[in-house]
Image 1: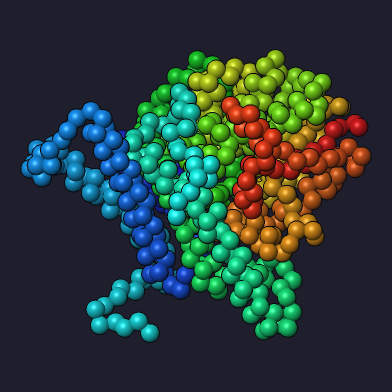
Image 2 (image 1 turned 30 degrees about the vertical axis):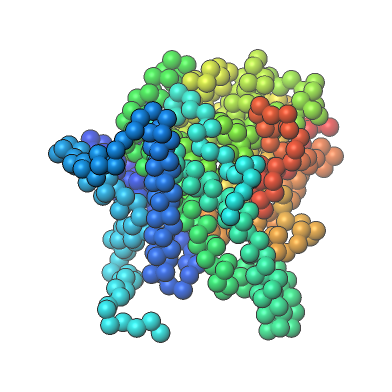
Length: 138
Length: 399
């Protein structure tokens, strides 16, 4: 096998530790200028989050549909079984990890902006405008 | 809104999972089903909104302000970018591209190590891979990740990495709405179908594809000419490794994946190939590179040999400006910077300027051959630069 090309990997500003997992690499941005379609950066983020939520809602509905069809075919599960369900520690840890992954999927564009800001020199960096409760939309 | 099943994007479980295809879960499939449906929704259901916005308000306003209609697709783009419908449609389309990448990366990243190991086993069995780590990455590949694919075709995470190939392969069925078939190899099958229908006596013994990535277009050609020696070159090592492993698992034995830049193929002798082709490759290069590639093609082709280059049609004077504008969307919004320049060029002229005689040149429509269907000749649905139908710009050397 040929040698690992650190150059191309480092172009994305990542330190690759080959012994670790690659979950941090999932949310990489594509190299190249991203166009701004909407009024400002915050609207771009909101659009990204909304569409990611739409995607994940579609996925959840498809999974529920699978479950309902299988249950309908093979077995009956009492509603009380679902309401009374208490996960053991292992299941609970799995569910929390999935919660994190879901959030990371929906918040992709913000993660990417944080990463991009880290790469920018201070004088050209554009800090995110955080909306305060008293801010009024013009 | 309800729809006929014929109007639906094909579900992702129709993908053919060969031996190096990444493992995936129920929810991964559901995510790609969402992406394919969303892509189809944006183009088929909402797409006409762009044309309406242009006709009803953007064009009239522009004409009133400037006392004339727009004279170029660039002028239309600049006017349309200020339209709220087009802006939100574009933002949604761009996000769908980005989400498609995130989904396949979320599938592939947890199995980077396993995929590399499996590929290594498949490749060492066949010996169908030649890597050259001295191959330099051309600037048009290094400077931008084409079609928003993070890390492009070349980024390597570990030794023996195939993740770039796996990422590309996993998502392409959703990006193309299944239009290229279960193995996403429709362009290769289209080339074979065109050759069999139009040149049934053509029997190439040495075949070269430049910019072959994971071999989507290479394998159908190799299968159609089982006695031929078939070589695919590309600059990206991870896609070549994945392609070699994919070919091995699909039992295609007469192909070799070689790491090389199509602009300089000195490893091959003059007049050493009967058939040299590219598929949706030229628009990811540059003006200079395209000339160098064609010079090499002209040198490498045997007398009587064929060269063929599949691209979406050039923007001719006959194509309405609005159509040019909407076909140009990817150039400006999906990291395809050379797309707009390429489509202003007649590729026949590039062949003519780099070693071919004008009497040798031709242009032929080449459409995808659908697998397992009797409707092979039914034209694919037009999608303004995305349909599985191309023009083949080509030349027969010495004719």
